[in-house]
Amino acid sequence: MENILEVINLNKNLNKFELNNVNFTLERGAIMGFVGENGAGKTTTLKLLLNSMAKTSGQIKIFGKDNVNDEVYIKSRIGYVPDEDYFLSNSTINNHAKALKVFYDNWNDEIFKQYTSKWNLPLNKKISEFSKGMKTKAMIALALSHEPELLILDEPTAGLDPMARIELLDLLREFSGDGEKSVLFSTHITSDLDKVADYITLIHEGKIIESLSMDKLEEKYVMLNGGIEELKGLEKEFIGIRKGEVTFEGLILREKASRYFSDLKPNKPNVENILTFSIWGNK
Image 1 (tube, rainbow, N blue to C red):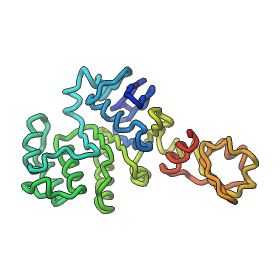
Image 2 (image 1 turned 90 degrees about the vertical axis):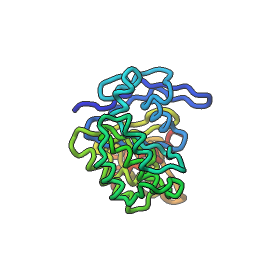
Image 3 (image 1 turned 45 degrees about the vertical axis):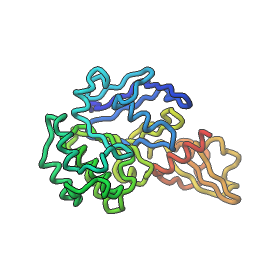
């Protein structure tokens, strides 16, 4: 399968933060969840992908091309939704569309009208009168209107009500369903990723801890729950563990669970389990 995105040995040195040797790839037709705690390096990585921040070293290839040397070509084929809206509060979504369409050869007014109508977004109402959820929907509508091949989303479901979140997740499945387009999806709402992600990339303190398909993650890790006495002093074998007075739960490699805890029933981990217990294990 062709990679639509390749991040190779990416480094960025900031005053109090360092992105350290980041590597991951995203195939065409796939949705990747990009997760980590606040300050882990998610937004920094996305800014580097978009060349809105200069990298210290490393390489980023999008559509097989260098993201700096071929920036104009690449950005014409990317849809981006940031975590904070970029709107002029006294303007309208219709005016924003008119301004943006100048930069895209593939701008499609019908797609723009389709999504603004679907989400009941008033075209000529001031953005200052939009709710946070409406602003997010407006940015998504604009991002999709030039028919991108790669969607990069930074916390897109924050501020959306449950029904709108479901609609967005359905949209992402549909977007990538033809096998040609992909989504890189940074979010704190890990339950959304359980529903739609094909791959998960976990970043912690500027380093990639894991980047695997959901199937491979479920093959590699399990959750174990049991009584404290069943630990047998083997806490160090866990990726991360949480202990109470009489019980424990922890994330562990499946092979170690079979070797040391064959009497305990393994449970399939979700994205939140992998995120939280991996972070606990690295502190």
